Length: 325
Image 1 (cartoon, rainbow, N blue to C red):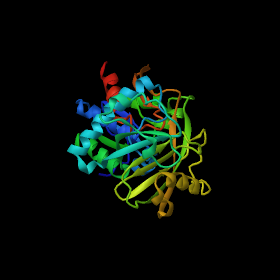
Image 2 (cartoon, one colour):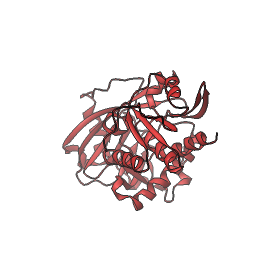
Image 3 (spheres, one colour):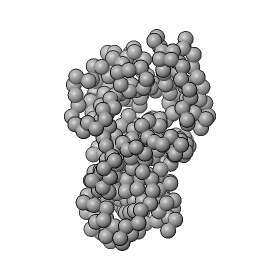
């Protein structure tokens, strides 16, 4: 299932740019709608931001909320179905608890979840005044992204390794294009409103944890604990407009300490790796169609810290936009 090394094959009916979760999911939706699809990307799996992400369902740093909530709802349903129909896809159902220093209103998407409920302060770790609980989904990207690639190829899609210099060049190659290049759209579109939000994560051996924890409001940065099959992803940072992808060793102890406040067993957990990803942030998700000389482009990027969370909802919406004409 290796990606082919050239994009010089006969042009496909639809060209999807980007090999991360947005591009692969969009390609799969188009294929299921009966389209011929070619994906062109600089890299797949390990070379993508999606591969670094903690990757759990949680609408984070994606706007506007009124549009994000319906997209997230679609993805929630798709991930729930995958836990039943495709256990090999690497999607895990997880109890998730978000904590706050003091009482807070429910998020905009709370009513979309079947088991959302508030948690009393007495049932939370010391120092927290409020919280809520719901079922979420953890996506093991090292399993899920290759699974998506296999699904695309099995449906007749073509995966190529190729980087276009501009959208105009892509449109000259294929008259219908979907741009899922994430932060790359800053130069490709070009779109100067895109900026990076640097996120550093620590991966440790799982000491027996099965619950996702989120703390975005207690100071010290966004904190999250994401248990996967054999490890736990600990986060993190949200450094706006910083693009250094080298891990900062000085940040790692603080990340672990914040997480250990929620799960004390993490204090002595063995560190497996430290990684950095750049979230593609924007004032709002860009999901719209644009006519260019020689063709039509649908933009699907700017998902902030919610690329996986919005992947199915935005992919289905992007496919619908493209097929309107």
